[in-house]
Amino acid sequence: MGWAIALHGGAGDIPKDLPPELREPREACLRYCLQMGVDALKAQKSPLDVVELVVRELENNPYFNAGRGSVLTSNGTVEMEACIMDGNTKNCGAVSGLTTVVNAISLARLVMEKTPHIYLAFEGAEAFAREQGVETMDSNHFITPRNIERLKQAKEANRVQVDYNTRPIPKDDKPPAPSGDSELGTVGCVAVDSFGHLATATSTGGLVNKMVGRIGDTPIVGAGTYANKLCAVSATGQGDAIICATVARDVAALMEYKGLSLKEAADYVIEESAPKGTTGLIAVSATGEITMPFNTTGMFRACATEDGHTELAIW
Image 1: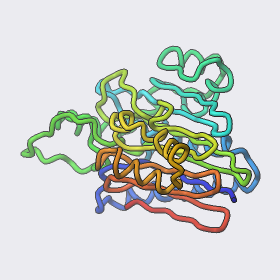
Image 2: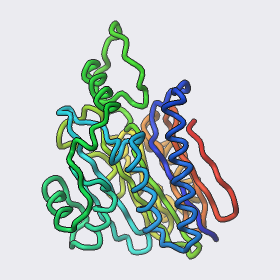
Image 3: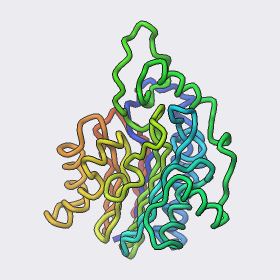
């Protein structure tokens, strides 16, 4: 048994010809965040501290759909959401509808630790953030030129999302019906220490051109985020499909009730439960096993274990 960590930057229809100027900054950020997490685990930081630390850094990177890089609603606004969970205690916290909080994942942890509740949203969550003195910025801080262009493309095509495909949509193409396509760059991290303690954290800006008030799988415990004494899971993809399949909890349930290994459980959920083309996940077990399956075109992902194994991949 040893420590292990995995992180993701979202799963979806990631084109194989993704331009280097879009691919390389994401890879560099994943590499940096992975090393940050490894160093924290080596310094014997708790898994809960580690996943919060890593996801905060991912939220601060405008190339991922969380925090600074959050995509825009149909009104051109941001509504960020996040969830964090401790596997040993099953304590968890979640937030949605944030418009000014710099690090949604840290507010989710404060909900877990400072309130009698699990989930706060919209104005109530914003008020709690002000009460706790967490860092906030004017909502314009989160509205990047890249995401303004994505929203424009989505509106022109009359669809909810443009996936990872940042290329212009041909004018003569018939726009597809709104479908709630895969999340662009949702971020997550799972970790286990050498004592077998587990934690998970997930954060996102949601879907391009989503309706105001829409909530996805990320902050829903058991859907996009879940941890217990057996495993920690963070999912990414089409949020509505992930909610219906209770993806994160099903991985843990298959281990708990069927005695499956982490890889067997995660593969079953990805191949049999989640509709094809909708879902990816990262997971670690209490014994230090890692798995990162997906049924989409690709998933930005990275991992490391105490025995020296490291990996960074997209497709």
